[in-house]
Image (cartoon, rainbow, N blue to C red):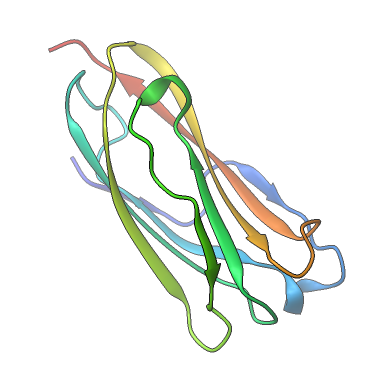
Length: 122
């Protein structure tokens, strides 16, 4: 199953105005109901019109896979896309992970999203 969405859950904090805020524009997740041991692919597209940006991924109990952070990404003139894969861990049931883009010039400007999954047993 493939899923694509632009808004999951989370709040963008418009400190200093919308034009300076880093924002996710596309969040693609291969499967929101993966099976333990599956590889799940992610593609995140985001921009920050006034400075470089740092992307962090916090998988929580969803996966022990470490990805990122990706720092000093120049997404000022066009959007950046970062793709990665997580191996789903042994914990089943409802789990969440977090993705966040932060303005490198002002860390109070960021967009953080919570992605929710329902991990199944094979």
